[in-house]
Image (cartoon, one colour):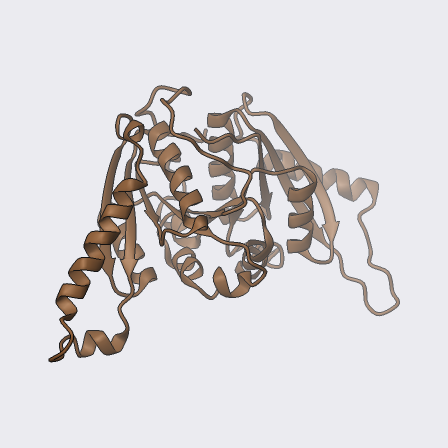
Length: 319
């Protein structure tokens, strides 16, 4: 079971961040976690001229607006509202996440309000390059397709390359699938070089045999990732696809009407290349549902146990 104690959701009053708050509220309520809703006012100084900060009255008005924005959060969820000021929005989010020992960060992307500087895709990407905690990204398509629907996890897709980072993601995906009584697809993608796809056979290499052996080995490793106990509480399917990883993942999401993708990421000091500009980035930008990115060193840890929260089969619902 995943242990979530603190959930942080930065908002900018846009529809995107409102949908992100739905997910943050639902998950915090499900796991009995503290929910912090953060609004950051951008400040900009020019040369030797200091930045203009909010006075007491302005801060009070912003806090009042934040209270109204978070008014739909159920009273059963411990709620903390915060107003901050910063020149760099992503730095302030990361600092708050570190200071509060956040377990889960929930971000909406591409805010469409007049406050476009606060929660654009660039801010989300900068946060993802450095965050050490699990981060749920609610992409534009998720907001546009299901703007007011209850938060549900019924069909989860978790791609894995068998690395440490993706193994951490598999654990989280298994735990979420058990708690929500969801169908989980564990997917491994074999990325075949273009030249092999164009010229699949030669006199000396049996490409079909190589492909079949690689697929069989990947399926074996996928099955080994699923403890017997997990199969008692959720449906787990394993599959191997061939081609570009992001395309295969998105195709699987469309085929299964996925409402969550769980992807692992490794922090090695070159996260710009590993995460954004890579498979996780392309999937997040195009996904029709939220994407949970789990760093290998995330504080979120999962183990396979019988569901102990609410009765399985009920959706996670944001009021």
